[in-house]
Image (cartoon, rainbow, N blue to C red; front, side):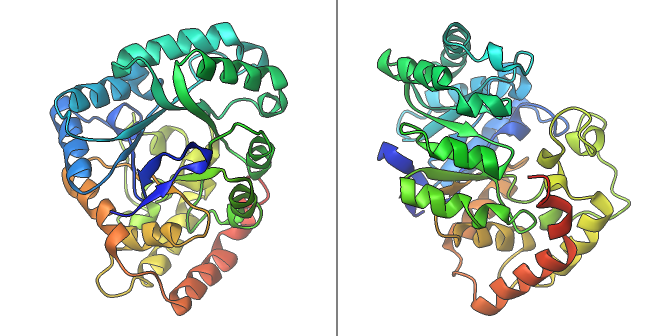
Length: 327
């Protein structure tokens, strides 16, 4: 699989990575054996980038990655984790002592002395403007606890603030065919600054796979049931903030645009890969088959101008007014 340099780090990552939220919690139940099989399928397909967080299953996702990699010393995989969501979301909690404590826990979970990339996990907006916060992150680098740091954001404005920071390696942001606003300013600014872009929620929580209907029922412990209106965390993390009924109808139109040889999910991933400035896209997977199919999108031809235009038209007509005013 093609690899790209992640921002200022000079570290290489596969253009399709693996998001591991599904292997921790909030997407229904996944047993340990299946979770390890997903990681194996991704690695066998050329994925060299795993993204996790300390809150995914309260550390379960990190621990599962550690278990897998300990049995595969032949693999070179860059592991990124996130921190900051295990406490009340108050700016005053983003201080060096907490960073060290969170980092100690993640390093234990991952079984490493130094983590490749640590990202602030969608903190309160004022955090991005705090010199003390980024000084503390620089200290973690100086102490060799982490190799590099980045941020995960909810809004384009937060992304632009973070990109201006001199030592930010990467920005993780929701980017997909139903969330195009980052194309306007964020991706160009990141390219100019040499900051990597990690595209998350690439399938709009599965909407863009074309598998769901208005009658689909999700498990009670799946965020697609309990967070549709932002009851538990930012609404934009669930179906990209798109109203479910609207999203299902728009996804049917999206699926119809898939060229021969592409599944709708692969069309969604290929669209992201083709956007200038994207470093890696990190779909999740609940089965080895999904992991392999996602990775295969990297080998498909770039999309034609006609297909790109049709996707943009669908977004402008059905989705844009719902999401661009908020994120």
